[in-house]
Amino acid sequence: MPALADLAIRLEEACPRRWGGVELLPSVDSTNRWLLDSPVLVPDRFQVCVAQHQTAGRGRRGRAWVSAGRASLTFSVARALRPRERPNPALALAAGVGLARGLAACGVSGFELKWPNDLVTPAGAKLGGILVEARNPSAERAAAIVVGVGLNLADAAALGVDRPVANLSQFSGAPGVPVSGLLASILCALADAWDGFAQSGLAPFVQEYARMDHLAGRRVRVADSGEEGRVVGIEVRDGALLLERAGRRSRLYSGDVSVRVVADG
Image (cartoon, rainbow, N blue to C red):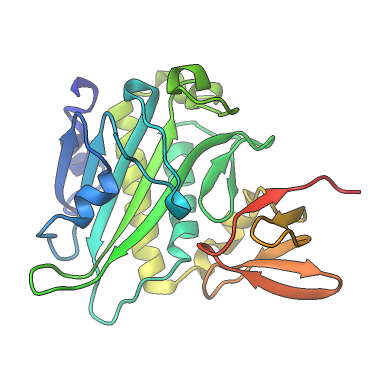
């Protein structure tokens, strides 16, 4: 992976003393799985795994995530849980804001965040996704959280998928940024967001998320039940999607449902 050979150096220069290790793999079944299986995580340091190709990448709810060499960027970041820290599904939303900050620092803008874990164009084509997973403590390993990210660098044909997708080359700023520089910017911003979330929860991210919220004010359909309602915000405590149906509000939780935007009318 020559394009990423200097990633560890770039990370130490951009945000030093935060990294427990950076692993660059030509191929792996899943970067999330690789970190979840890692026996040792350095306390209070982030462990990074980047793969040129994933053979069994995963998305939310067990869906496959397509990864095709230079057509995509796939990586995961792990950190051991601190004392009294508990997994919180709202981390996926804070991670989305961190990812957006890292891209914006490289001049990439114009995308939106689709609850709970996607980056999309205003028209809804998928640019990337986030998968947050946890591992329980054992005698050999500390409890940990892993945040996995996949970003499309090329079009659907190069990725081998038959659905509309977006890629970074469509956004201003992206073509002139080296992949290692882009990834270092993303990882530093993601680490900042993760630390901020661990300290203060989702509250510091809500306004920023709202400015990029793809679903805000839209009618959506809950895939599991077929119910429809209008999105009125995000619950600060746990990141639930707030949905208004016939004058009553309800909460949808990541991991329970998928949402599809439906036309007004």
